[in-house]
Length: 110
Length: 112
Image 1: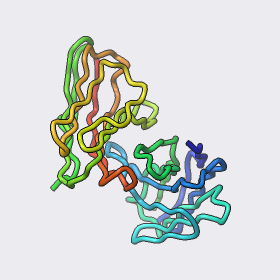
Image 2: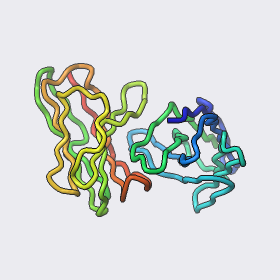
Image 3: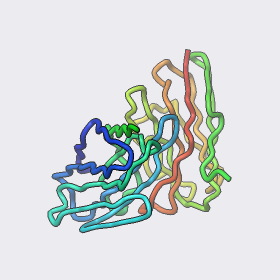
Image 4: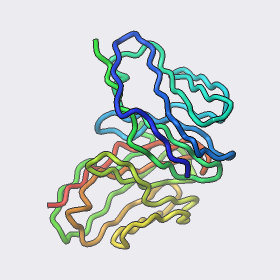
């Protein structure tokens, strides 16, 4: 499984756009890039998943360059409630389980 | 209407005891999981079941035994509890092995 590296923590203010970059240099052809969010005392929650280029949903955007060795989760106009740990995962197609790293602790301040 | 529900939410027990954590999903999913999150917040897969059959069993002591009576339930039984078993245990489910996972709220197990 490809290893992921992401910043341990990030700080932001309400209303700003936050970009969290994850590197996955050993990503394989069949691997997808998936992001989860975890609030304290709760289970992780799926945010977005992509394979290449750009994916957007109502919560976030995911940018994946052509070489797929990194990806960037973009959260538009964050609010205090976006304070959480964000996990970048590489998930092989056909492989069910998720391998979580340390994640990025995002702190949004007023 | 909770999608993945676990009981109990908190469990405090003594070393050596046997305990069970129950998990139910009402999403109609085929695949269910148990994850363990330790004190350092690392989340690790323990077991994965697909259509009631065990498909992944990571290096977990055999004191941990999952049981799936039907597709909607995956219970975790732990024998002879040890201090190191203290952690938060998360149940999760997904439609199949390729789709997103939905996690429960977790069960905080404390062994004293």
